[in-house]
Length: 243
Ligand SMILES: [Zn+2]
Image (cartoon, rainbow, N blue to C red):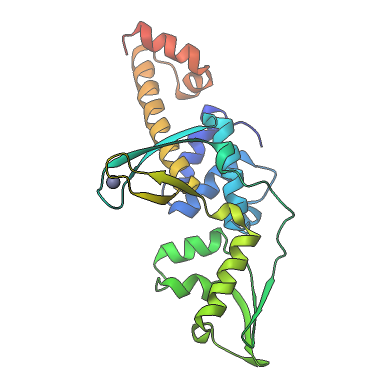
């Protein structure tokens, strides 16, 4: 991974802006991993994608993460603070492209969910529902050797597929054991690096544009010139102009 310049990160923000979460994550990764094509990045299983997003976050904004999450019982805002290293799953061998589960007379071949699936489900072009992701990912389902529709798969077969997906791509699901200091309720809070990193990039970009606006207005410098300055130097000029 290359560390991104201010100009490159701003470009990725602009490229990702019109998209839903999956497309935004791809825009960030496309800038950080130019040696990989967007098609290749889009086909990465969600957990493998998230491992790259975590590396990008660590290289761009550092490893410490903090945020607020609402207690599901009393609604109080609870602070979460952890390190990227705390939620990083050690990378194992890449999962096979097609996995297989045999359960209760059923044999199901399927692939892991990737960014194309997330984007398709978020686009609303397909009716969203719990079975939609499965329908996209199942390659072939058979019962006693005969073809069977995904929607006809029994619950325990669906559960076995979910478990196999999770085991093959463990970084896709990050949960943090959390306790509410207000009411004592304990729960596993989910953490989505794609959403989180995008919000950070957005806040960073808006601050940066404001700074460019300030310096360009006062000194007449170009955006390119201002972005090429180190953040440290930019900040010194902003202090001089009282911002
Ligand atoms: Zn609470």
